[in-house]
Length: 200
Image (cartoon, rainbow, N blue to C red; front, side):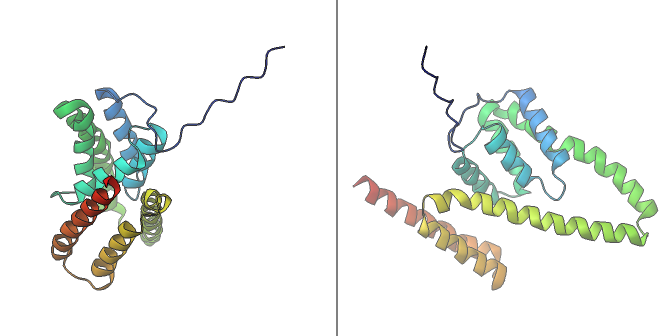
């Protein structure tokens, strides 16, 4: 009797297992994320790209999204263009961008017309307040997920820099541009020194 075959290995979340997406894949994926992304697309984008499709590792997602923070315009829109262009060039960026913005534009146009007509109803105001609370919860959720690679690697320096930026902007209310101008060169210098030590 042949021995039992070993169980199939479950791929780790930081290992890519999917082929690069095509133009149609990009459009459909980002359209689905945008339609599902009530309260913000970022949590659904990370879940779809890292966990569902495995087109990026968690570290790659964090690094790409961090880059998009320093570009003008909405972060998730910047990320969409960068992500699509990375796999399929300019057409890939356009496909992902169209998928991200196309369905919400249609939906929001319809909702804006309805809100203009029924926006003064008190029950609707309470519903919108509840939706805003859910949006905050989703944001906290994706922040913790994006922190996971740093925690797993026990990257204390990166966590300290992140906490310092949070305190500077979120608590001390310092100007965003000034904090970034200080944090970026410090982060680059720390990374350079750490990699030199690791290579030595």
